[in-house]
Image (tube, rainbow, N blue to C red):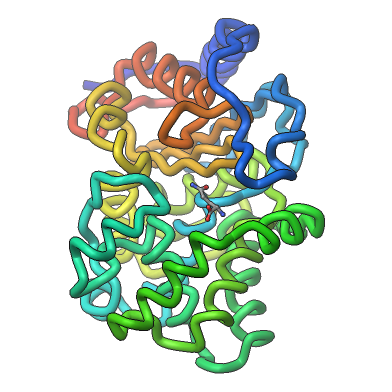
Amino acid sequence: MDNKISLTQLKELVTEAHEQFKGNTDGANADYIPYLANINKDLFAISICLMDGEVINIGDTNYAFGIESVSKVHTAILALRQYGADKLLELIGADATGLPFNSIMAILLESDHPSTPLVNSGAISACSMIMPIGDSDAKWKAIVDNIAELCGSETPLIGELYKSESATNFNNKSIAWLLKNYNRIYDDPDLALDLYTRQCSLGVTSEQLAITAATIANDGYNPVSKKQVFKASLSPKITSLISTVGFYEHSGDWLYSSGIPAKSGVGGGVLGVLPGQFGIAAFAPPLDGAGNSVKAQLAIKYIMNKLNLNVFGGNRIIIED
Ligand code: GLN
């Protein structure tokens, strides 16, 4: 069923979602990365990017926060661009873990592969795959160039976050070397880990994440920069990965209650992809126990429910003015 709505009404709905949840004080900033613990917990932004490139921005949408695990989506896309869908499945996998994002247990349980590029193990493995193998500078350039293409603009490194995270990423070091033990790291483990840590430390706005989400929803064509960033056939692949594991051990509950495949990061960002319709992003630092932003989840769910949209349903929105 078509659900007709004007751009003005959609803006009002996003404003309403922002008003509704801005006073919510549930959750807590990530504190295992010292930089994140000190971010203003009241920051709150919601952005939607439509298929024609129109962007709706409400709240602190100019604030650049740590992209963290949302960057796993971007680099999974780069690995897909460089290797294709079959090779990614073979070298990393596409299974949900049902376990926390930094789980070592998940690697032990599925020792034949890291399982998905959207948890820490698979994301470090994806960084190791990025070509050219062995050349840290060129790999980094490929990673940031790809992120900029998806976001439609550059995402500068937050130096303090990179320092903070590099000084405390002992669990991720163990993951990188455990993957080496299982022959699931395809470059030097420390080099791959450093690239992963650096990509997590890029600063991004909710608008940039909404543009990334819209590019995925729009078959790889960035509706703002008007560039085909990746092949259309890769879009369902990345959206399926986001669906199965985007919220880690809460992915099923999330998809069931929100109806939109979405990926979170401990910086407080979330991006959601509604294929063929829009990309949505929200940002608010306080997280639930699985590391997913509380207010971002509330806002996105609210908007999806009000619009009566669901990736598993037949409803579509038609924007008319
Ligand atoms: N850089 C963070 C980590 O590896 C990202 C985790 C996340 O956002 N869920 O722990």
